[in-house]
Amino acid sequence: MILKKKIIMFFIPLLFVILFSNIATFRVNAFSFPQPKTYNQTLMKRWKKRFIKTGYTYRLDNKKELGSNVSRYKNLFYSSLTKPYSPYNAKKIANSGIIFKVKNIFPISNGYPKYYLISKDKRTKVFVNSNRFTNINTDNKNLKKFINQGFFVLTLFNEGENNKLINREFNKLKESKLPKNKNLKNIAKNSIKELKNYIYNPYTYAQAPTLFVKQSD
Image 1 (cartoon, rainbow, N blue to C red):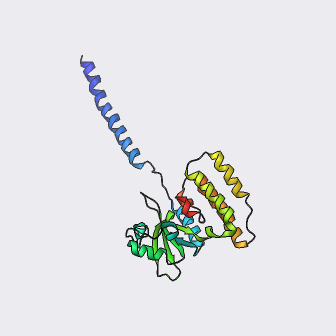
Image 2: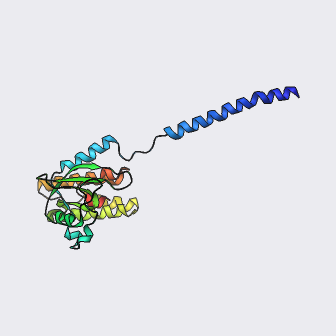
Image 3: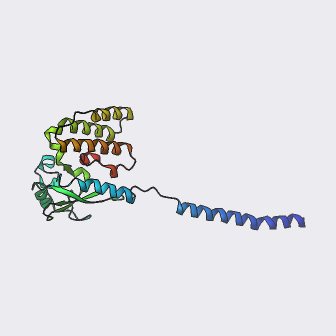
């Protein structure tokens, strides 16, 4: 009986040591487990660089997309990351014909990234989601067939169609007849590369294609 008690007394402290050791290990693992990062620094630099490089080639959604009702411009365009322009001022800026360039990009942890746009005279600055501004080259008639096919590929991707169909339509885009104009040809070639990265890369927002930025949300 005495021997049995001694054995029990020996194992009880040992059990506590093992138990607390496991709890401590669990706490360390729980708090040190690497969290998935949506954007790393290298990716951010590449993302910003691609858009900045395109220069003054973007316009805001205007009456073509939003119509004339001033209420439709509410909370679309911001003077800072958190402060929207009044609907009246937003409508005025959007329909002013100003062409912008991307100055910076700010990922938002609980929503869409905000693009910081600036006018050529540096007087107009706007923070906006990617689905509310457009690359003006998408209106170029010489790129119409290419643009339409690109839009179709993005629609399939955004609607979660099967990969086989997306691949087939993307291959059609790659085989498209490109314009003779050197600048437009380079835009198309670059867009094919960017669209491929967008579709086949897990960091979707950061791979947003510069030509099809409006459709990348």
